[in-house]
Length: 390
Image (cartoon, rainbow, N blue to C red; front, side, top):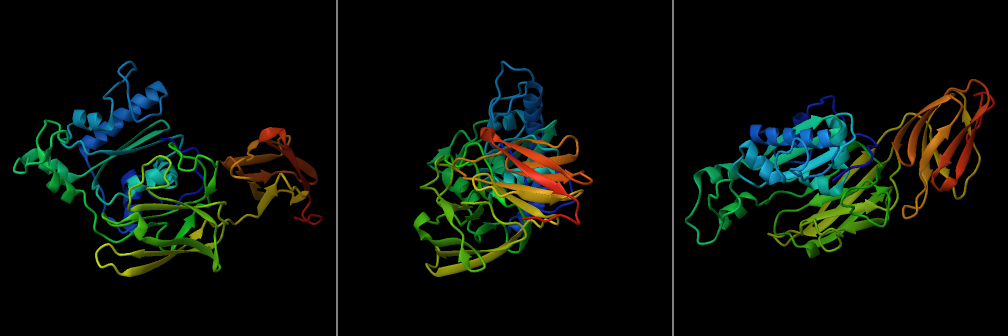
């Protein structure tokens, strides 16, 4: 599973250690901290070594390639010494550090639900080059695999490395969540990204991008039809969205208790959004209304929105920095290909349709943006005292 673009960090952290970042996320989401597991650390380390040495990005390994360790996350955990084969795994590629990697994965809905799993309490992680791996497990299952349980007539025989039998009812108790709804972004969160691009597998196969998704996971036993309202608002006005649940998920990965709300368009910067969730409590049958809010990323520089289909000439001030956002149809999008300014500007891509440009033109000049589909836009640069931005 690969995340293609990092826009902004979802959690502002100075720490670069993966465990600190993951635990900060889980604490804000109301979940228990993770503890580092030596066996999972070894499994993750072996996998990124395989990926990096073969330039392969995959959850699976093949013995026909060098540095092969074991085929699947479960088999790698067993080989590293883990007793339980209940393993969840997230991987990413292309980021500069753990903070960027985890932020990218938190922006991708299937990967987010792994990081926010209420069952896991152990983690192993590793980085080699631009390859990252995170393996998760459950300590109680390790203990069950060590002690065994053969008193139940119905039991699992493929959970433990040595074939130790674990009863289904005990397994279900260990992997059961009965807590409060897990909402992301969490209530009051700041610096939230504004856009979601792509994920493998893709939850929105007919769109190249959308707004940053809002998600909620309820206690186990929650029925999909018990969710009555899941909406996003700005200044009291509802934002058009797509609701993904166990029925509408094109990849059939979401559980009955998991829901994701995708805004049809990227969110605005420097903006507060409100979330309203109304549902029927599985135990009490009461109707509960949950209200949260979050704030999107603050941008100190001017934001210039470009629309290639209805383009109006844009004038920029010389020697200034701007964030350029290219607006287009999410189903048939246009993206930046490259920028031409004769060495008089620098830029950093934040996504296929978003970049920061620092123009170094001292007096007058122009910046040409070349887009996908052979289209181009020209921005005029003038001295500040003569300038006007439309």
